[in-house]
Image 1 (cartoon, helix red, strand yellow):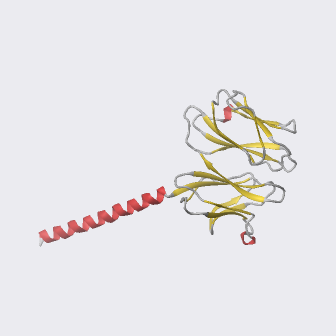
Image 2 (cartoon, rainbow, N blue to C red):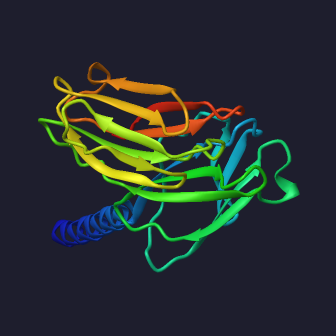
Image 3 (cartoon, helix red, strand yellow):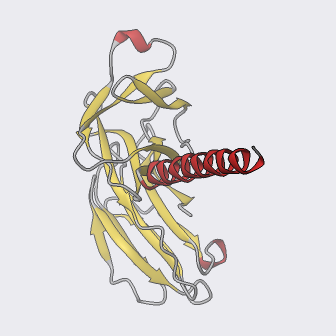
Length: 228
């Protein structure tokens, strides 16, 4: 009897071990199937926005000038999501802006609620590169200042970045800068207004987005956002 009991106990242990391992494998697969997304509200005087992928809400009550941290969403390049932004207080009124997009497994994204004019709202999506350089700060620059009357000239004091003028919706890809040697300058072409970001605000091993925006009156402003 003892031998039979031992055999049965051994079989039960094998079954439970197999189930445990199977469960771990499934959970690992689920993690590998995730993507991460941040949601931004860059529309002047807009109401707080909720962001949806299909029927599921992933960003809540995002006011103008704010953004969510990275949130986990199911990543699958084969699935096209209907990404929408809706007023938090009246989601039943329908979306203010929408776009179809897929999110690849293991990647990071930013979704910007913005405008192309005073009337037309839209969503702009970019894939983020959060891989750090231990010796430099990595900077991505995007102009979403739809109220600005001209392009914005961008340069850095260390001359790593050649002077470049970018209009609404245009961007400068990730540039590696030494925080000890650089200061970034932003000059609105049709104005004397100059903004700057000091190197002391940047840190080696960090990745940043600099968002160029415009006030209701068309004055340029910049916002530094850490991505990692």
